[in-house]
Length: 223
Ligand code: SF4
Image 1 (tube, rainbow, N blue to C red):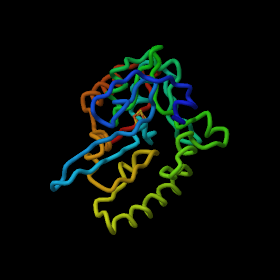
Image 2: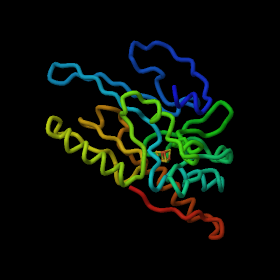
Image 3: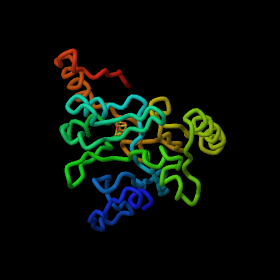
Image 4: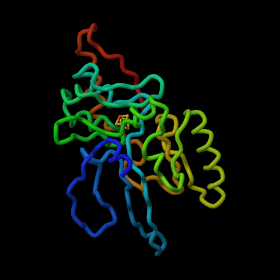
């Protein structure tokens, strides 16, 4: 709700599917949502919750996908690393941008804009913390310098490992939104860890090679 409130995003019409998962997915109005899954292990039911959002990749493939069509359509803020899209992003083909993301995050809003979590760039560039971190009553999220957050996450993981040997950080060397889970990440959600869409990687490479040298956007290999 804090995310919707800050971003002035409306509600999306949903229906009861017999699951706690509602809304069912990220959409043009929903930049962050808690994924829910109920699994049976050794005859016991277990619930898994995962607050899915853009990971703000260190080398964001969605930025490469957008910039190949629309210079200035995606920005990686130098000071914070936040990745966000501008109105030019809608010049890029949505499906290609969506497919380029290893976590299936970008969505298209009703007005045609490509959207996702911006790390609350308008808040953090004015000394505030992201709305979701600010509002969380249990302190489940932390926000700060990457090195400090990584150290905090590793310390917490080591403590959790005494009772949860599968405790792990997800793709911590590739992202800025670092998750700590206590079980197999695939039990939380199929996109909890990066999945590579090799088709899109090849398309990006081919487009880069075909583009005139003067218009090429420098890309960095990731994954
Ligand atoms: Fe882009 Fe996806 Fe990485 Fe977010 S998680 S920066 S949308 S590639």
